[in-house]
Length: 96
Image 1 (cartoon, rainbow, N blue to C red):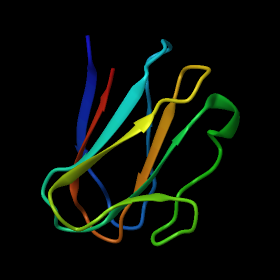
Image 2: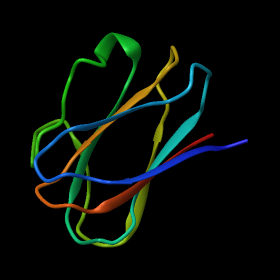
Image 3: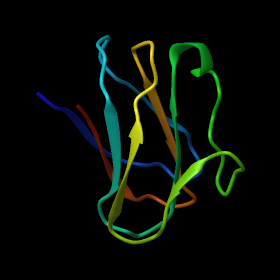
Image 4: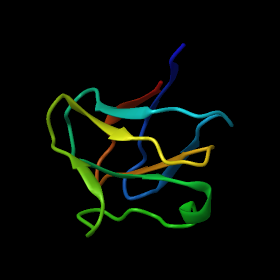
């Protein structure tokens, strides 16, 4: 069964979402309204202190359009997803 969370980003503020303590193979990040770019990281517990930055190097990016990106879930669990945007786009996170 998939695990899903939805929210709206606060401009220039990192949002942190910790997945449940179980193994997932994929994590999908969705830019639901496409108003602004979303920069994000999907991190293992040992890297969870790292934060993404707007237009930052080594961050994944969802363009300012309605779209999604799947990334492999890190091992060991639980994975942490960190997102940031210069604006206030709506997002969804789905893990399975």
